[in-house]
Amino acid sequence: MILKKGILNIAILSVPIIFILGTLFVGRYHVSFSEVIYSLLAPLDFDVSKNISRETLTVVTQLRLPRAIAGAFIGAGLAASGCAFQGVFRNPLVNSGLLGVSSGAGFGAALAIILFAAQWTSYVLAFSFGIIAVGMSYWIARIYKSVPTVMLILGGTIVSSLFSALLSFLKYVADTESQLPTIVYWLMGSLSSVGYSDFWALIPVVSGLIILFIMSWKINVLSMGDKEAQTMGVDVKRNKLLIITGATLATAGSVCMSGMIGWVGLIIPHMGRMIVGNDNRRLMPVSMSMGAAFMVLIDTISRSITASEIPLGILTSLIGAPFFIYLLKKTKGGGWK
Image 1 (cartoon, rainbow, N blue to C red):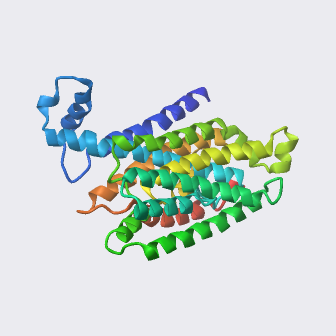
Image 2 (cartoon, helix red, strand yellow):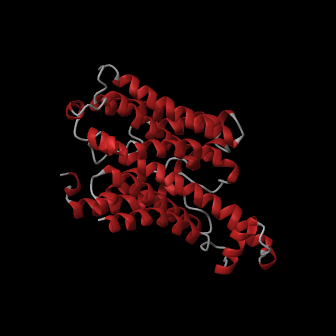
Image 3 (cartoon, rainbow, N blue to C red):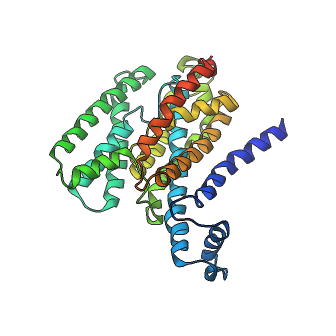
């Protein structure tokens, strides 16, 4: 048992790292194994830069590596959020955007594109309105003092619809030559413009991941139902709020950096359950690891198979929808019995 647990922990840590290193070799600009190694060692002041060209060094360390690292954290954030929501709400069909965070972030980004030119404003407004959307969903649910699950889901549906309508209005009034194409492309998801200078936007993602990892055992208790959790001495309202906060930080931080990317928060937790079962103490880190590896893989495909990059949201939908049908057929809901 201890040996199996150790192997699982090693796999959880190593899989995303392997995918990040692997993506450095893939792309329309060919680089060899030795060139990748030299490129990674060059910033450490080893005398290896003479073995590679400046172009190769730039491609590996300034273009591929930062977007791979960002993609890994974004995938982990979306997958962990979906895992948390599926456990807390006891519903295998919910995802990381359940409480309106994606719609709110989309509206915020579109607003920034119309009003401001700087890219950092898109990050700030997308993140801010993602948080606001979840806050509104929680406020609607407070109609009942106990904040029941059904009211949270209903609140998320209402808020998502509201911000979707506001986003449609912004697209209607946006300049069709410059602003509208930018909004549409952002909504489809991409990591093409991500660099090291954008890593500050990952702070809420990392914060959310830490919260969800610490609270993973509480998700097990809450998944039994509010009354059962209360009889076990768990403060349901407080712990739900903490988990929702962690999931919101992870999702809002991810969406503000990459745009709206669907299916990751839905299918990755299901894949994790097929491997480790329903225990969130094991499922949460596995979901983080698989989400990170999946997003790095999708980003690698998006920038490699055609001359122009394919938006991430398109690929995740094309892959996620049929794969989810396969999962449903294979498990027949067994992971939730």
